[in-house]
Image (tube, rainbow, N blue to C red; front, side, top):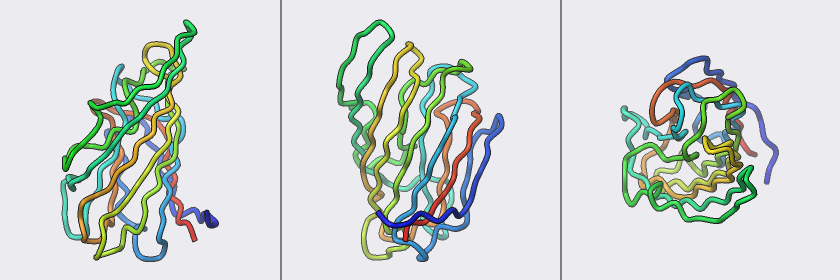
Length: 177
């Protein structure tokens, strides 16, 4: 991995989304989004992202995703699961980075999303993420998400939002040299 360069910091305070509409360009082949203390206003919601290709709007590009998860509950139960309900096969929904996050003051998530070659006008754009979440059912989840954006146009905008309601938190965007 190269050296990260901070491009922007966005803070949500009871916000419906964080839209990053500048700074994603051909300067870097990899962009890293670090999100911390993401806390939903609504209980049992999912945090996710979607993108726009240059000149498009609506944050509804076609994606294919896959989502494995491991968890360990306060009751000492644990497991590994494959979250088929999070997968998209050429879908346009928000790509789910979390599953059923709680809205308590001690329930939040943090993680990293990597987006590769967003400025390419030849290839699809690959991504992966790793998120640590305090689940609504008093357990620690580690959720992985991987996939690709099935667009050959340059991706230049990204949105982060909950499946329902508002949220608090910080998202930093880095370019990786």
